[in-house]
Image (cartoon, rainbow, N blue to C red):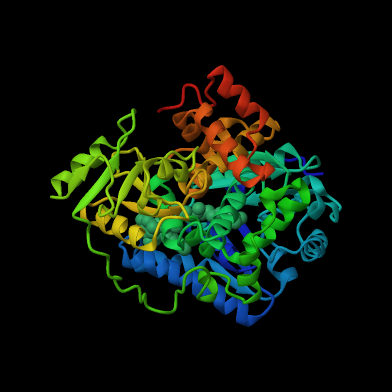
Length: 510
Ligand code: CAA
């Protein structure tokens, strides 16, 4: 048993096994902290690739003036590439495993580490979702085994999930949390459950984005823009899938599906197809986007801007400002559509079909719904242009031209409840409440994890509070009614908070 308390400062030599995307980032991070790193791979080719990645990352920091040439060389000198596990781990105070996500490989490796490491060395796995308990199960001293989960890019993202099993000693967990702080990260302590906090919330959201793309709800660019412009996230979900690696995402989803069941974790067929085609994202040059070809997205020609627009105002005055913007652009606004109007705008509500408003307004083929989303933080908001399937293609073109003329930050969505932004966000908020309801993590830890692990400007539960639990429940109800998918049923605790008007993050900054 590991009984002596190791201070983070006592961890001087670290072995990192696996120099893929995550392992190379972790090796860089640890070497930057002044520690020596044995960087271990199974052959020279993988070692060269991993070291090239570390070098490129450090070179970028130098070119941005964040690091001097000398400091870069010192960091690199602290990393010793090695292609033999037993030699590499022999003197290590801590081993961090970052090999491919295959349980048999990891169990075999940990059994080997048991033999090859010093008795007081800590053994950590960077697994994204596999059972740390199962990985530890093959060792003789599971008290010294824990999860230490970093986020991509590891040198940048501030979160580390420290995962304990029922057998992990408090000393091991304490040392890893202290070390994380020493590396400039914020540790969040969790127990061993598939996906831990972040991946259990992130992956179903990413998968949902793929479903939206696959079912032609919107283009990949608009799905990504809804998340960045509407939620303030640093990257859209399809760009983030490409960053993480589609194979990794698929593997995490499969683990989540095994552990929790339910439609929310069933991977979108398109995700599997891209993996089968070995289009894994940035690391292979192409995923949802192509990183090898220069963008050929020449500005496609916009339809002519209509001379007259019919705008059906609602009692809430949601389109009043839009009417002024259109008038200011020299386009006349009428309240009743005529045959020659060509574009009829109605206020769209993510709980209701635009189709019904379109039929009520007459001229359904000419109707476009507009839904404004406030971005907060002083950033320009997002306008969702919502197209019922009966809307004519020419109408959609005119709406896009109008949006461009008056400077709306617009995305286009098919007419399905939740449209784009709420469909993506509210389903994730529901998952976050389920995680709290399950007793797995506190609202504060959930929000911290998503902010520091994925760069969210505010955590999902704070955003839920801002949107209003009752509002979120009613959009989810509409999504459930339209799709029949039980994954969108509001979880009982969310329904309870909505009824009681209680906030999840009462006291958190608004
Ligand atoms: N390695 C090292 N540093 C990197 C880097 C990399 N791969 N990518 C970016 N950086 C650094 C840049 O050098 C820059 O540093 P300085 O400010 O010191 O100059 C900084 O990060 C910002 O980079 P950029 O200006 O190039 O780009 P950006 O502002 O668009 O930020 C980003 C890039 C940090 C990746 C940001 O888009 C972001 O936070 N995205 C969300 C990423 C995310 O969600 N990660 C978690 C994925 S889930 C996961 O990893 C867990 C799992 O198990 C699957």
